[in-house]
Length: 454
Image (cartoon, rainbow, N blue to C red; front, side, top):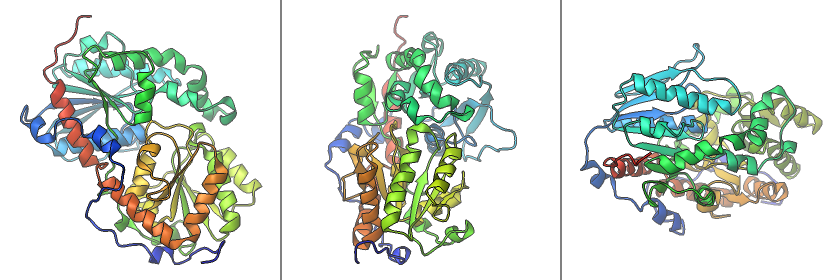
């Protein structure tokens, strides 16, 4: 294929995905995530647990934290545990998805003020926990969107496991006021920049007084280590544990060019995908610039943006200013079956974030058998071997990312090799099943803890 030409046969050229698992990484991360006892040893200590899951996001209110909490709750229930989810109130016209097993969802109010919602929700969630009897075997808190007061770590009788899915300090370190659009919709982004330092102490409480902390990538682990706090239960209570990817739900078999026709798109044109909230730290305008540059060499390519957020209005204006109205489609949120189909049908997924706790989109694309082109944030440096199972680029380096995108769109052989390797990487230790095996083992480790002196 000559430079600049783009395959229109890409969706007919998908490789056959094998089910065998092979070692396609350097093995370093695998040693770190497999350093706890396995599920068989953990299961020998207890049978069924009564677990409270505290998460300010939970379906029908999705998001990175909500996705992690939902996946864990579904799997905990499938493994026989009784789970009580405590989450924030949601619009009454949206139903909570049905979950098989012994699961109850409890809703509590919170103040709708940027940043203050974290501690407001935490206080009301603990109050609900007390109303439910405060007799759980385990309390799992999805931080940093749910922040507890210091006294809560003693008021709650059960061991507390805190999932550190990110930190406000980390997020504000990688965005500037120039990245934030001046609109009322961007109030949350501005609050992260200017108000979040007041909430660092609550993150420190979680790190110090939780029986265990689940830290979702090595970059975040190192940043937390440098905060200078220590856990009262010991130095071994901070665990590196990636949020697992549901590799059964997100799979190459979901490929469906018909989804493009349903959204008025050309099923023969190469498809570039962006999935996520249209907010400052997601690199939304970089995403458009990357595609614009690549589109000059691959003029038949199309970009689909699955998401909405405070930067949507400015993004639409920039699309029009660049004359890309016919090449860029912004859909907003889509039903999950359509998301599955888009993931598996796309030729490439762009992930240009300035900062991430982990970056679930990266794993979801790889599990779907689609090439990921991602900035070096979150777990990307740990799992992406550049040019083999995906592409990675320095944050804000749009020129390099555009060059990588052109390679994916114009080289069928390269793209197919990377599709296979990406899927294999997820299968080889990064699935939701692997995550749950580790999580149950960590639960078992802290079951016998006594509360330390106040």
